[in-house]
Structures are given as C-alpha cells and as structure tokens.
Image (tube, rainbow, N blue to C red):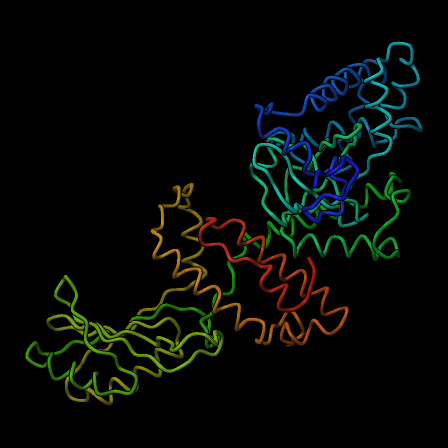
Length: 452
C-alpha cells in the first residue's frame, strides 16, 4: 500500500507522513546538504536583523543577553542571538517585530514567512526520540506535547535517544528546524525535574498550552530553570560520588601486609585455602600466587552467583590481603590471622581514600581514546548479562520508586511516571553504548506494559 503525504507515519510518532519520515526517505537516494537551506536563509535574516537592531537601538539591543548566564565563547551565541532578537522585549516588542514594522517594504516573501514562523515558535524542552546522524531528529516537547521531525545536521550527530535540549523549533511549511538551541543538553532525570518545576510554578497540568508558552515571562522561567538544572548537574559531576560496594560499605581500597619465613609459604597457602569461601590457588606470571575469597549471592545483584570479598596474594616472604572496604578488611583480617597464627608477623595496613582517587583521576583526565572493537563472542556475553540483569531488575526494590519494584510501581499513576523516567535514563545510557551491545529498553516496556 502506498502512503499518502497526509497519512499517519508508520513509525508510530503520531505525525503525518509528510512531517515525519517522508523527506528523510526521499533523501536516501540523493546527497544531503550539511544543513537545511531554509535554516541558512533564516540565519541570513537573523544577521540582517541583528545589524539593523544595533544601529537602531545601540547598546540597549545587547542588554537582552543579560537575561541569563551563558558563556558566549562556549557555544552560547547560538542561543543568545536568537533570544535577543525573537524574545527579549525592547521598548515593548521583540526586535524582530520592530524590524518587521519598520522594514516592511523591504521584506521578501521568504522573509515574511520566516518572521511569521518565528511568531508561532516557543521555547520548549525537546526530548530526542530518534536520530538520523547528520540529517534529522524526531523530537517531542515535554512541555507542550508537540512532536516534530527537525532537519538538523550537527545536533543529530552528537545527541542520542532521550537527551533533552532547550530551544525553539521553527516550522516553515513542511520543514521544521531548530533555531536557538541552548548549548547544553540534559539527561532524562534532570530534564524531568525541570519540567515538573516549570509545571508547578505555572500551576498547570501537562501539556501546557502554546498560548502560555509564547508568554515572554514563561520563556524567562524556562531558561532560568534550565540553567539551574545545568548548574546542578555540573556541581554533581564535580563532587566525588559516594562510592560503595554491594554490601553498602564506602569504597576504601585496603591492603593488609604480613611477613613470613619463606619456608612457611606452602603452609600459609594451605591454611588460607581451608577457609570458607576460599577459591583455588592461581599462579601469577610474576611468581605470586593468589586466592580469592567469595560468598554465595549478592545483596544488590540478584543475578550474581557470588560476591568476591577479597584476595590473598603471596610472594616469597610476604602476604597481602586486598579488599575494597574497611569492614571487609577487618572481617578477613580476623579469619586470616586465626588461620595463620604463628606463621605471619609484622602486620601493616594501608588504605586509600576513594574521594582522593576520584579527584586525582579527574586532575589527570585526558580525552578518552576511541573504544577498541569488541569481538562477537564478548558482545554476546555482554548482551546476555544485560538481559539477565534487567530480567531481575523488574523484580528488584528500587529506591527511586519508593522502595517498590518496577512491577509494583507500574500499578499507580505516580509510579508509572517515575518508572518512565527511569526507563528513559536506561535508554539514554544504552544509546551511548556500541550498537552491538545495547539493551533494547522496549523489552522492559513490553514486560511492564508501559508506553514510552
């Protein structure tokens, strides 16, 4: 069956075929320009308006850039310039309205169409649903509920599913383009909090009417909330995370060292090997021998068969016990010293602070090297591990769901809302993974009967 231009798009986006995949499918057989021509025409008009406005209003025109804190040198101009032209009121009207009034006789038909399209646009929080890198993106405004297929070359290369951007989408005929995108995207959890803050402040329900979103004061609110969310995210990333093992203990790498007479090495290894949870001895290339200590199951990961508590390493005359927390170190120390009584001496302990490790790693941070290819066998193992993990995840108590499991949370409206944000976060993380090892979050959605 042949699809008509006005038929619903078969991808399920809710858009008409002409507004969704028709154009991208037509372009498959032809070279695609770096950017939609209409976008370039709009940028030329913005440049003309900007030069005119500076001559007409002087320094007062640039004052609109002070509506928010944004570094012009870090991609900020792509948002600042459209803002001061299309949003910031100057003597009662945005600059572009003054231009349209005073230069009416000089406007071309395309200029008039672009200006009229700008009047209909608004500042939205657009969630990326799908990308065709270097070509286009399907985005949905989390505030208004509007969905668009936008022609976007650069953003479609860097953004992935469930990233959220703040800016305006301008509709020109059957085309939609992003005009004035804030240079920082947010992950699903932070974007969801921003949406909720805007909704509560305006005391409305979602979706928010476009008439309200066109209000300059609402635009200011959205930008302010977004900037605060970006700042909060940056603060969290600068703050060392609270690292803990699966027992809930703070991560504190610990090494307990002992000395022994070289002739007692075999007796020590025999005593350690007799302890509960001790694995078989493994030979190292450097002449060391190690014994791992495990226990059955795991408190956090139901699909883990066991948990490694620590590792004992012997050399010619030294024993080292490595653990990742003080509590595990103390527990293993007691067992080792009892089992090896009379054989080991000169105990010394060293510990490393996880926060210091994190800060040191950040200070010497270098751009990540391109990931090395993963062979097909390992890819299959990774996919299988993820499948087993998420099979158990839907039956696991989740703090973000108030201690409920996903299967329990989906039974209430508030639980479904919180669960949907979690699933978006998982999808967003997976979208950054190599395609061959990504987990399909739709498996969880189908299992939970929760639409995205």
